[in-house]
Length: 339
Image 1 (cartoon, one colour):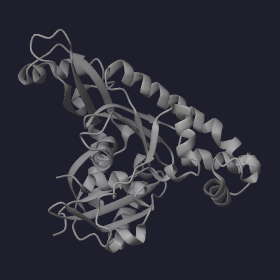
Image 2: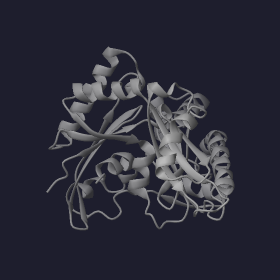
Image 3: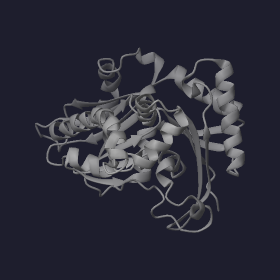
């Protein structure tokens, strides 16, 4: 039977929904859809704009023929605070008592104003001189209240909320995978997530996305945005097309992203130690840029692959009509896969 909860990814520029059906080890996509997020999207504080977001969510759910009103929702990564911190080796009880006091040093908001969660990433054996690593995640209560209100106005009920990074890990990686960095390229931002043994050890949101690339092409060639978007998808980083002129415009912007990826990889060398990053997964709408995989391989010396959250899904039904588009739905799929 169909899952009782669908995935709802309310991005800055697009709303995406995914519903799956699981039978034993077989997973089937039974609903998926996307629509443009109006106005300022979920980042807006305007009641009028947020009502439009709610209406677009409702329309997207209806068009995708989602048959449940219960959803798992993602929080935009830049709206939460994630920190990997170290403690002397503590028991669960000791850690619970210490976490709030310690969090005050890392969370730039009053603790009373956030919902705080934590997860032990590593815990050395008793008697070891090594420290344990704990991932802190703090979400402002006012942000959570806004999401709840928008989803309620769409006629839906939130069954769970989690960060985009948590959903990406679920949809694109396995516990036994090598230490990996996910690069999720959206329209207005790019999220970096490092995963070791199935656990998040680093997240970073960068204000560079697909729109920046389109805007650069539009400005350089004096093109309207829709035509610049066509140039981006047609020529990308291919040096053999249009004399490499589009590639020359895009590379300086992408080099900012590369710099941040390399900083994140260096972080992994310092904090993950014997298991540094060896693989890079690109996902999101921006991941389809022609030549991006080879460019990132050249610049980072990592194995680069395009993330496909539907790789192990049954190739029947709606998934056949959306062939090759799975990467766009990575966050929504991760939400729908919540057990």
